[in-house]
Image (cartoon, rainbow, N blue to C red):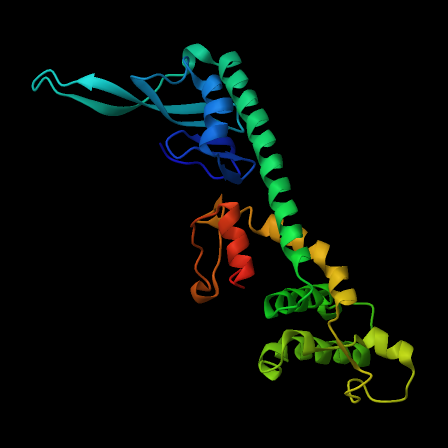
Length: 279
């Protein structure tokens, strides 16, 4: 069965891999939840011991497809084997199929909310465990600061040319932090004040010309302002990515840049990767 793109698919279920995709987001369901909540929806109408469900797709245009695998006997050899085929849903349209779809979406949503909440709680706990800043945290906060200042670089930004040039300098200083301060301890890294902050100082000095007053340490007070953003961002960023137009859970490691790769997406592994600075 061909997998349709998220733009045309409401739901895609892969019963062999225990994957469910809804609105473009794929979740791999753990064995316990699958057995307790998904199997009762599928068995025995859609799935059985000798006629197993492979995949089910519900399209946005109201149509649906289902693949099954049947245990059949070869009349010549007498041997039995599993044979894949497309199951005819015509007799079940639309009521039974819509009922299947609605129940699967309900359980998928229940699972996703629980999983994302667990991830967010564990991420929050991970970042609250230690008051020690590390370079992984420094890098994430630097990226947030860059994102927060993206607006200054658009053509119609409500700032004059001189102010925009200062923002360009600010953003470049942020980008240079890993190279310029790579030999510094994470808690000794200096961040530049924004042009807006510098303007309020009214110290009469050129922007970023004073190494003392125009830069600041990323202390715990400053970090605390970003910690919830980091947790929320990681919760969403680790939930889904896109490979060949199909969203999948994805973990990216530094030594695999520009390569979308799936892997062990269990919570323990995600937390381990964060602790080791690999996300």
